[in-house]
Image (cartoon, rainbow, N blue to C red; front, side, top):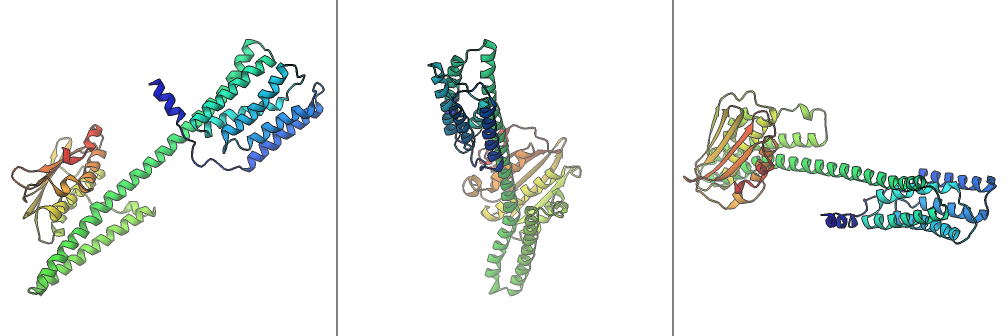
Length: 393
């Protein structure tokens, strides 16, 4: 487990799109250079002033690349002071400027913007410098611990900010994915349903045009009605995508609208709808989900039920839950859309998001059946297994 964690940390990539160099970076650079220059001029205890100023100037330069090249910035800055302190250990008589405290910014940037292996390598360079500098300037144990603590705190702060930023980015991506899935379900359940009805009616109209023109005219009226409703629902979806104020005020179809599905078939199949029990108190999300699931079940029967003559849709109140069962009397099959496609997947997602369970499969007496139970309040009460492929239920 530890080895896996180390490998994962080592393989951690850099965060994407680090911020570009801004005026604040140049301001920080100028402040460190000015601080170093003033200190080099006014301090009386300094020797080799150009050298010690040069060390601080290199650190200030490294700060400009701390986000785009964090490891290089750490290696250059800490490598410079490491060489400087190593020279002091062997006898070079010089004292560094206080402005080298700007080094504290670099561990933060390394762990905030560097890859995992860069952070590990850079931390090794930092710890090596800390060891050398305490040899060059022997101090009490408490000061040694404080020195390590400051730089490790800077690194930990960068890591924590990075973790928070990654979590936020992941939440945003998941929210976008949920919105795309929601849009896909709405398009499939609304537009797909009506377009299927239009296609079936167009086929029927073509067959009737030659011998029964009056019936073909009736079919064209049905197509016109379905096309108008498709356009209305498309406009509602586009309004939501444009985030208009009126979009939230548009009423959604609910359980009471299930009876309308009989008109959508145009007479090809007889749809029997039975609503039983106290269904008035259902929460709006549950009511809308029941309508969409019933709509998709009828659409699937229209598309794929071979030799079916009717579709039955039954909705019943069972204490704290509501049950919907839709089935047709076509030929029993386990192939085709029942084991693939987005229809059953979308229905299962709707049920799972509301804490319900959906089961679908062929009936022993023929045809296909969809059975879904939802809590009336739409609370999540089931495990994520409810979202599995309904063809496996």
